[in-house]
Amino acid sequence: MANSSKDIQLIELKDMIAQLNTTIKTLMETMNRQQAENDNLKAELAWFRQKYFGASSERRIVDIAGQLNLFESLPEEEGPVELIEPEVIPAPKKSRKKKPTLAEQFKDIPTRQVKVDTLTDEEKACPICQTQMVPIGTELIRSEIVYTPPKLERIEYMATTYSCQVCKQTEEVPFVKDNGTPALISGSYVSESLLAYIIYRKYGLYIPLYRQEQDFLQMNAPISRTSMAHWIITAGIEYIQPMYDFFHRELLKRRFLMMDETPIQVLKEEDRRAQTKSYLWVVRTGEDGLNSIILYNYTPTRAGENAKQFLRGIEPGFYLMADAYQGYNKVNETKRCCCFAHIRRYLLEAIPKGHEKDYTHPAVQGVLYCNKLFEYERTYKEKGLSYKQIGNRRLKDQKPVIEGFLAWVNQVSPGDSAKLKKAITYIKNRRDFLMTYLEDGRCSLSNYHSKLVMSATYINPFINALFIICTLHNHLSHLIEFKNSIKS
Image 1 (cartoon, rainbow, N blue to C red):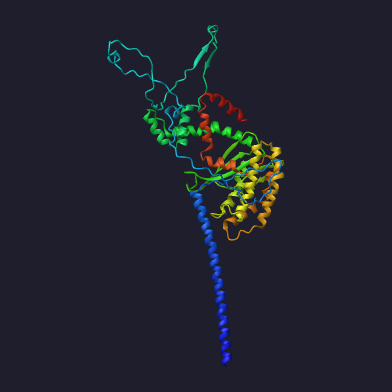
Image 2 (image 1 turned 180 degrees about the vertical axis):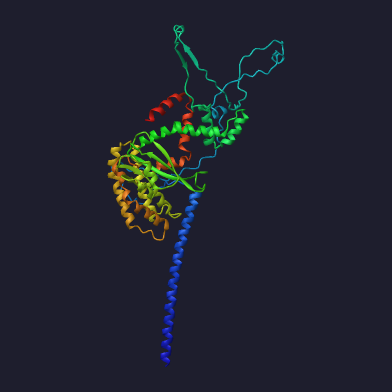
């Protein structure tokens, strides 16, 4: 019985130990999972700090002394690509910056000289013989900047009527009247210079029309905000819309396009709340060596049907560079190109803080692949290669890099990194478009140009172009002729 009792106790102890081991194992798994979540949260926090407080450059040092490169070197006859290397520059000695002179500071504004004449005749008399002294030279004693307020002027154009003096005795005397150039807006007193001034203050200096109305009253000119708004809208319809339609038709003739969209807020839009998102699309021609055409298109929604409608009528088979937004799939019969700048951005965001130079980290390895492609593109431009040469060199240099990149994507393990998982998923979803740009040297590696244009302005493109047109005071008649010619 004693042995049996000890056996029972031993079995109970073994069960207890097994339960404790199971509990410990569960706790360890929970702790590891929580640790991974903490690491992700720390990475997220570091990313947000970098996003809001740090530099936004995506440029990375890709070559470190003593560190092996993931890529093969260029052929010997071409020489290696010059990569960015850290350079230690000794701190310069502190020296006081030389303050520019007034002549240097205001060299681009008109200058006139005023002779000083404040001395009386008695002060100009010689203190010895009382003879009036004569000027023998001048010197600069001071300089000042004078502000001349803007002024309004009413100009009345007087038409001259001509008649023939020889035929004036006949029953039908011929007359001809010189009516001059037409007004900017028919039946309105607004001039090109006045409208340009109003538009610049409204959209360049963000001065609302009601405040401009008050300013004009101070100048004894009762110009109402209603009139100003009417002028802006009418000029946009009469001058900018025909030009916009003309360039739209020209854009649809091109074979390389870039497209991007961004949300904007429109106040007091009919049947819509002010908080509702609207969208501004930018469509521009690619790097095909021809003159660039950049057009904006406003839509109330982000539906891909908007992109399809804007490009309706273009010949099938054109190349379209856009991001991964699914709405662009609505654009049929196009060859989609992938933006490697977007891919690199996702990978950069997946690099934990402090691991930017850790070449064993998968995200850093992915960035290296992208950087290699951009380095090749930079060397092509520096060498001034033709589009045909660029196409051939891409097949030779960059296609193996992309093939290696895809092989790396297939075998890389993101682990518990949510951002790296997101980056890998993004790349895999774009797999079919990664090599499209290799088909033609005029295709772009990234959508950088359209992003740059989109981020540079949120001003209505009609108004922006209208400001430029209105400043061309001496060419109004030519603009009217151009407007009439492109209507067809």
